Length: 316
Image (cartoon, rainbow, N blue to C red; front, top):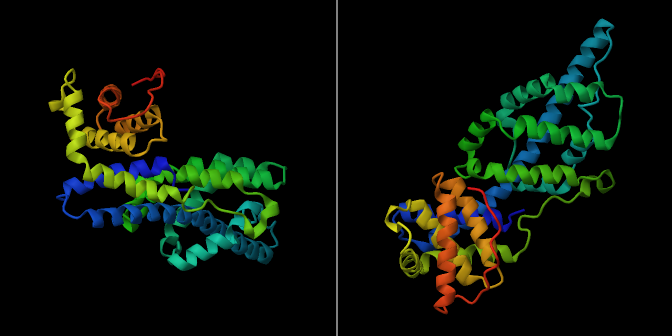
C-alpha cells in the first residue's frame, strides 16, 4: 500500500518539519518518517473497519425493527443492506481482524458518528436505489459500498475531525489512503472468503529503504543541493522562491542524484505535483522549469549521469 507517491509526500512533510523544528536530530526525524508511514497503513485498516462498524450498526437497527414488526404484526424490514455480502466478508477478514486486535483499533468509542453515518447512508439516493433494485448479487453488494464510500465517507468533515483527534498524521494521509480503500473494495472476490488479501503495508520492501535513503540524502547534502539551485538559477529569481519550494526542489535533486534508475522526467513530474499541492499556485510551473534547468546543469557539469527525456506538455 505504501508506495513511492506516498513516500514522497511524507518526505516533503517531514523534511519541512525537520527544518522548522531546528534541524537538530536526524535519527529522530528518520524514525518519525517511518512511524508516519506505518500510521498511514493503520489509517487504511481503520477506514476498512469503518465499513464493518456501519454494517454492524445497520444489522442492529434491522434486528430492532424486525422485533417491533413481529410484535405489531407488520411487514419486517429488508435485510438486504444489513446482510451485504461484501461487508460481511470484510467483517470476517482474517488480516483485518488480526490487525485490529494487534493495534487495538475500534470504532466503539465513536458509535454516535457511526450512527450518524448510517442515517446519511439510509437517506442517500445510492442506498435507496440499491434497496429498490431487484438484482441480488455479490457484485451489486460490492459496488454499492464503493459508491457509498466515494459519496459519503471520502469527503466527510465529521470524519476528518475524528481522525485529526486520533493522529496528527491522518488528515494529511486520508486523501491518498482513500484511493487504497477504494482499490481494496474493487479487488474483493467472494471465492476468497475470509482469506481475501488486503493491500500489504509496503508495495515493495525496497520502498522502506527508498524512504530512508531519500530523506537522509536530502538532509545530509542540503548545502550542496542548494548550491546547485543557486548556480543553476541565474535566469530565475531564486531569492523570491517560497521556502516550501526550496524544500521540494532539494528533495527532487536528492532523488535525481541518489536513484539512478528513476528517470529525470518521473522525478520532476512527481515533485511538480507536490508543489501544486503544498506550495503556492505558481509553484508548479516555476519548479518544473527550475528542476529541468538544474538537471541539465548537473549533466553538463558531469555531476548527474542520466538522460533527459523529451518533455511532455503540462498545464499549470
